[in-house]
Length: 82
Length: 140
Image (cartoon, rainbow over all chains, first blue to last red):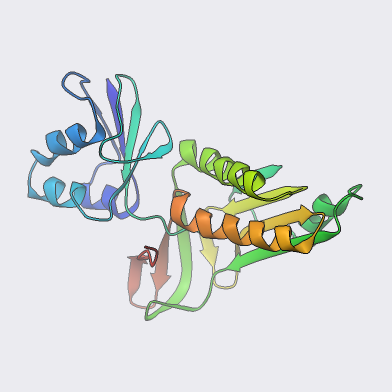
């Protein structure tokens, strides 16, 4: 299973902080985005936002970053700390 | 190296002492402190809540620190970032860098803050006079 996490306004928009996906058919982060986008307009719009940031196993990642089973993948809006 | 994410406040003098105590090789210390200010992006601020990605924040800050060490000759480095509920005027973030010479200390502390603002998974939600709002990133 792949653990998926959402943070900040993205978590509120999706009303979801965490879910799990079967790793079958998932090779890259973009496969997760594609799969979750099928959940409806809200998900499709939020996960295809131009400035969306992502991380694989707590390292910043891109849509073409490889994902393996049991990885942790996180999606979040641009960070605003400091 | 000291990298900490905490809810509690920090003491500037204590952090400065940690950078200089028994440290006779470094002739320069640069410290930066970020605070909650009263007006942001057209909104009057009462306070803010800092959310983070707990499993990633320390890792991200340690990576930034390591990158800074690759680029400049540094002695001690301290990064403290607070999370949770903060009020107007509260301290949010501390970066302290010691080095043999001031150029490296200045450059590294600026690099650490700049990179923290684009790469470290923290998000500010402001409590404003017109209700709560997520701060929009002004980076990139």
